[in-house]
Image (cartoon, rainbow, N blue to C red):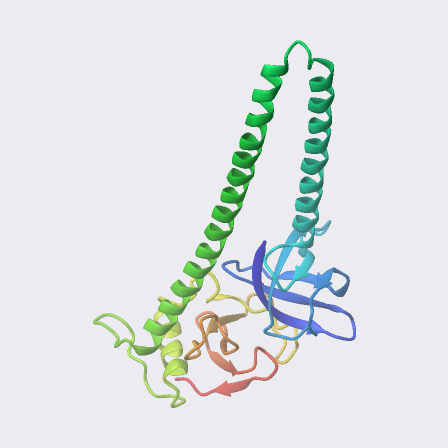
Amino acid sequence: MQSGEIKHWNQSQGYGFIDVDDQPEDVFFHISKVRLSQPITVGQRVYFNSERNDKNQLQATEVTSIALSIAESSASDSTNHSLKHNSKKANANRHHNTNSNSNSNSNSNNNNNRANPNKKSKLSTLFSLIAIIAVAVYFFADLKSSLFANDLATSSQTSSAPTGEATATSITGDAQIDRTIALIKQGGPFPYPNKDGTSFYNREGRLPSQSSGYYREYTVPTPGVSHRGARRIVTGGNPPTVYYLTLDHYNSFSKLEVD
């Protein structure tokens, strides 16, 4: 499954958009596809499957709060049920064959009966080991991705700028905001290269209306947070001529005076 944060949510219309991890294109979702145990909120972290509709727009087929999807769980339950059914059927056939040939093959049947539990035990152990390895690989990859993003954000916040990199000039008094502005002017490198510099579509309508591609967004790292957080700088023009700051994930904006 894919993962991301809810970027926009329209309660009255029952739809929203998901800001996908490591993917510039947002994913549309409808409330009918949501399977969450808590109310939908902007900034909420979710897991989902997606597909393209007739208009080539990415839309979520289900949205959950855990990595394992409902469809995958159902498929797993169906597979386990089928395995149990086949196992019972095979045991019944072995029992029938044993009774039919007990007089002529008693020694052979006794050996098979002793071997079958061992084979079943080994097969069960193998399936369990494969499942444990798969779960470990998934969570290790997710943990590695989070730690890498956190290292990038921490490095951006605390390290001094080496020769050739932009030096943050005090504009707002916030070190992370000022460094992000300096990186925008310099052209990077950014802590989230797959997200920073992508188009901001102004779906909430809180900024002046402009043509598509006019606005671009950049992540402002939040100290102590391992993900992107809720702080962004949105620029207008290319090169940027106007800067806006949002501290609450696009709910409100303030204009920055940047030379």
